[in-house]
Length: 416
Ligand code: FAD
Ligand code: PYC
Image (cartoon, rainbow, N blue to C red; front, side):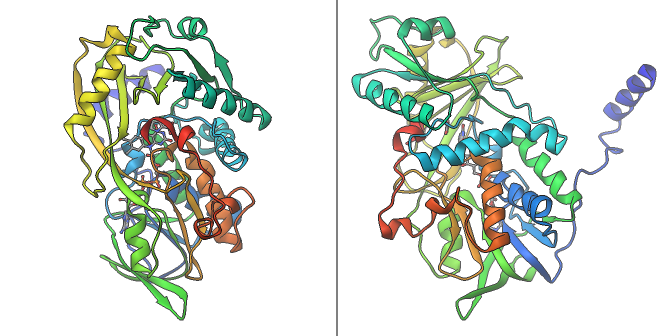
């Protein structure tokens, strides 16, 4: 058996992957589906998977203008946590975290989910007050959260510079031990394979160019591969939510910005947790390949270009070297950006739209990766039943007219 495996490995290595079975089909679109999901990021694919697996709705197409997982899902820095302030958010993100905890097994796919702990640093009195309040709120919501002193921060992550001589000294931190990372591409691939296996058509290189509405009801979409009819359509396009909403004739309170990240050359294991600092606007973790994965705040201009300015990266490099001086001679390998859609209260919109049968899931800003399974789960419920689940009801679009905002700017953290 061992011999066979080695030969098989060698054959596959030399065969340019010729004999590798495809993990999902590449079907041509049918003229009509029960449900069309626009956007094959993690959220769109998870929605399709849960429609099929939990609600028995399998006549579903997921339409993707590029390649699946090529948007923010494949560009994000993979921080997963559920330590949000308000009850509504804690419930939603904690639901997602619980799904993450069983997801690799459920999808039978190695998501490299690693609960290595997320440490948020405190640098000033305001940070300390906000952190204390949020740790207390988290505990009331059964979300694990700890408030650490400077000494406890140092003991948990010894490479941090806790000197009082720095520009923004570390006064403490909050720790969510169940937080961590997952392999972003694998999340898209795992959901895609599982949705495809249940009959969902995933159609790549298929851009939606129009949304058909008749008498206030959605009837289908126009695409670069032709018209497709559907009585229920979900818009799940991250940074392009406003563009798709405009096609259906309504506006969203969303601004789109580039968000950048970069990775270093690979290093031996040196950082075992995720470090985030709102105060100095930087966060870092180490991937299983050894690269430091580093991110910063939003690039301020509104833009649909998937790249940002060098000055943002320069600032984050300065911040990281102050926090972790041993990184000062590490070379950076590549940088990139995604487009994130930001709501005024830094919380997502998940639910109905002014058009009957048309649903939206967007506005996750800089923090939607962590919600991927939970987000798909609640949107699938909403599309299947026509009504929001209690978990996503507070995140309706009409909160911007009712005033019931869910202000998570502090928890959305470093990037806002
Ligand atoms: P996407 O993966 O972007 O999927 C949307 C898809 O829609 C895309 O593939 C796009 O091509 C497609 N699409 C758009 N328009 C059309 C159209 N007209 N027709 C067909 N398809 C269309 N979140 C965290 O929780 N933790 C993090 O650490 C984190 N770090 C981040 C770092 C960076 C640099 C960035 C950019 C984002 C980060 N995020 C993070 C945010 C997170 O990536 C997103 O909130 C999340 O991935 C959104 O998932 P999605 O499936 O909705 O979007
Ligand atoms: O939401 O935790 C987060 C996050 C980290 C980096 C970008 N977003």
